[in-house]
Length: 63
Length: 425
Image (cartoon, rainbow over all chains, first blue to last red; front, side):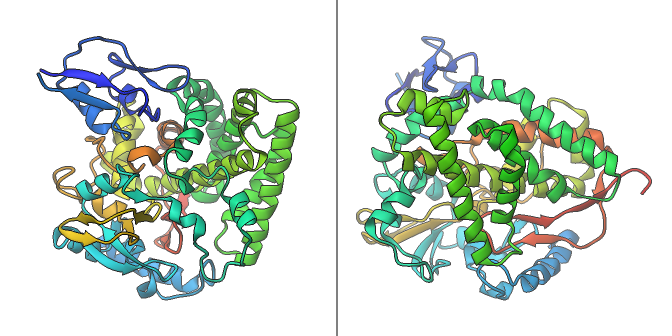
């Protein structure tokens, strides 16, 4: 299982991650990604959110 | 080819032949390859390129040569790399037949158009607009969208069948939602809608449409001036309050215009074409109508399967590149086939089939990369409300007549009209 990273400088606020998994991802008032969990399970929905992210702001670093 | 596809080929040819509109009355065979469809489907030739060489040199609508990219992974790669595939070349390009403009005029008309910029100029504008399309902002708009949808369904019901789902529903609803988003005052909306309708009516001559476009731009200029003086609660007012110092008036007008065009044509055509697609698949229509959980995935699948935006913006290679093994030279143009990419087996199994139960997220109907549709959350919300609402109001909705008038000569695919009926009629 890897570690989830969100680069807020790259994020364009498309909100695909929040749509995919609102338990792990949120958007701040500027629409930029915020992680709600520090070390979520990076399989399943989180990986789908990373794959769907248009800007490439999300990544999973494998251990 | 399915039965539906055969009948639609015919009516596509008919409606194109009828169109002494848009770029002119050309035969369907002259339609640029990336715009060719057979009913709901991309032309077989597009699929053949995707499953073969992957790319092909084609001629763009303006007579330029460009590489057409068709595979899902290649399309994602081009869209995902604005550094190597630039949007900014378009600022310097004058399509044949357009009046010559001074550099100042070009800059003025380009201001605020996010699609004409690369990062970092693009990032600056995009970041200002992002807060207006968050889930929270959409939740605030949602009750008004429901009201607008219901009002139009009430009117259709009162008038009785048949109705034109395009003119009576699919066109006016997104137009009023844009008014709501931008902050167009109630008193201006009837006129705003009339202008938008003229601007988007392909059956009217080009000069008439250009005039409507100028009038709409003048209206936006007035609206921006009013918002500058007294900023409201909606998008333009918010931009003025938060970024009024750094945004020029031309930029505000450009942003408003882009949102009008981008938010109107696209959602309108999805509503029209999507309803027809559902009527052609009655079991899937029943699912969307009856199961509240079905609409989310259904909207994604309709977006993918219909892929109403043929290509999106044309890019220019900023340096030597390679796509599907094909070397691309610096400065060469690259365009994308969104429908071909969205029916690639690399994206999902059995891609030619419409199945609203699956709703795969990786489709590129909203694009990908930094230019990924800014209004996607709004479009999704409108569709998630509108499709079930129409089908619940008229549970036995069906086409009135056999004629299918697809719109071919347009950057966005859709229906010119969609006569429908319901009840005993």
